[in-house]
Length: 508
Ligand SMILES: *[C@@H]1O[C@H](CO)[C@@H](O)[C@H](O)[C@H]1NC(C)=O
Ligand SMILES: *[C@@H]1O[C@H](CO)[C@@H](O)[C@H](O)[C@H]1NC(C)=O
Ligand SMILES: *[C@@H]1O[C@H](CO)[C@@H](O)[C@H](O)[C@H]1NC(C)=O
Image (cartoon, rainbow, N blue to C red; front, side):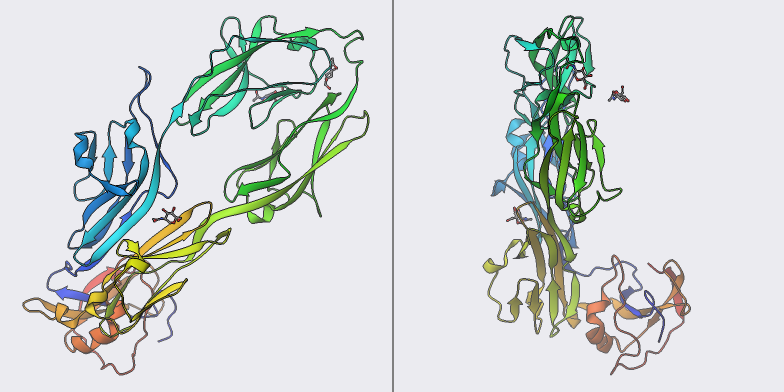
């Protein structure tokens, strides 16, 4: 056989004839679970607000159908005691919290158990979204000399997720408009910087107000109002000159997270307005990796990646005094991701199976193994099992080795988690009367077959037993992506006697 992937190999399927459905027993395995990132909910605070229900997903496959339980903050979570506020989707573990309340905050994890083992889900932090109000201070009045740089600090209220802070201009009629001036910049901590103050910045018919916005709650609050009194300079406007002065810059060692947005800041004041340019040490700014905003003061990486690491320098000059520069070294950290995930295997007694788990991340992830929902160190002793950082090997399988194995790769930023199972299939399981069971081979109709083509499912009778032994590990890989297994002919296997083609199927 010289056909290429995916159909080169003959896929051996185990079928129960004449029934189309399989009743092969197996341990549970998670198929739906919460993301490893946080979940948010909101509790009604205003009349015009609605409850936002939240759902913590959990669904496992397995035969017999698994039973579900939850833990919250490390303790058994009895969702039934919450009246109708919390319900579980029928046949699944998924919790639906229709009327969220403060007490629903916590760390949730779901377990699915049947007689063959236990699967556990990602654990997820559930937070309540919040946006408090500003302190009710009377508006401040500030007097400032025209031409001087100025900063207005904002003390935003607490909130979760952290509110976005900005400054707005509110007219006496109450209308709000955003600040859009090359001379005025709001830094990421919420301070409004004037590179210089002009007489037009004076608050004759408006007030400066800080705003805190929660995107999740679709809500904002205003506070920290400031009236500005600008004292006209003696000289005519445009005559005064100030050399560049540093107002706000990002920290020298800036850590960004791979795949997330990163912003490097250089805000300089002065008159005329300093022009900001950026360079990457050791070469030009990499084309296409970034944009600038705030009139050049902010270098933005939409999705930062390892290649963006390096030292960035901003230069501020306005033709007065000496130009200034500042350098920021950008370091990229990354939450773990799998390079090799553990895979579910069906194996025969006596065989050896291996679960592998490899991951990548910065800082380097640590790998922890779980067996049936517990750290593997707490699993019953098994001399035939060998646990290494990147793999678990179980030799000379016995029926009792059937169970769920999971791998958690974590670092300081986050984790990835994947579970799989080994199902040890004793021959007797399949040869029980009265079901007539048999081996089928899926053959492509030709060597050029591709995914989506039709293939013929051929059934042949005995010697099933022998085939099962040899093909046990591939015999039940019928879900998901089918991977080529052994090629035909397999050493030591008798040549099958073909029955006529009984079905046609599509190659998955
Ligand atoms: C994986 O490990 C991290 C770090 O110890 C932990 O926070 C997380 O809850 C673990 N994930 C699961 C599913 O247990
Ligand atoms: C700000 O003003 C500039 C120039 O007047 C204009 O091009 C830009 O679209 C404005 N931006 C916003 C967000 O209003
Ligand atoms: C402030 O800076 C702007 C922009 O450089 C300049 O046009 C203006 O004359 C300056 N105003 C004062 C009062 O210095």
